Length: 267
Image (cartoon, rainbow, N blue to C red; front, side):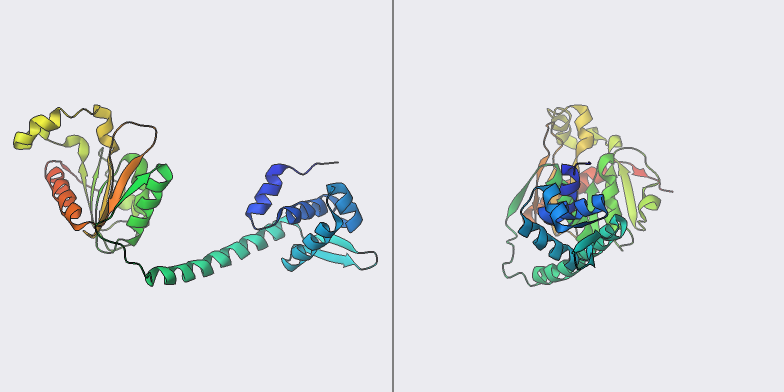
């Protein structure tokens, strides 16, 4: 007789079933229909847990009782059952998002503009990028590597003035991401010698040339920014802040770099 895999049980638990519910439903799929005794003997679990799980599964619309005496239960076909579970999750996600956004808007503790937050790890960097780009309402200034250009999709169809510094001559960016007000400069074309007295310091930065194209910088609406330096390492780390003094500083630095890089003629 087939055994129930741990992957199957864990997947069903992720979709909202308890461990016993996942096992009972899977057993009924295996048997097609069965009495309670056959289920708990096969699973080697307590009889009350099987009854409780059957009640929960019937409430969720995943199991039906097809006979009263003796009580025989039948699993809803998996394709229909998983569709129902996914729909429940979708509705729950929609309702939770509405409620959480209301809580977010009525946040009782205002974030101090002086705080500088630390980003640590790839997932935190990506989440922060998505959050910033998604809530921009007027303008964005970005330095993005090719690996992160897809985050521009969060700005698709938004009326934003976007200045993007990337590395290479990708002329299809505006069309690919549906960006109407996009200007792109090529970071590889930066003229370091044109920075006056700073040129000698920039040339002697202790950074391998291949790392220069790993900058990540996002400034939205001149109000909030994130920065991930291009230093070699296994783990990405950076900062994000609304500090107005830092905003002015990074704006100046971005402007200086922007002026010394060539514009890409977009299709």
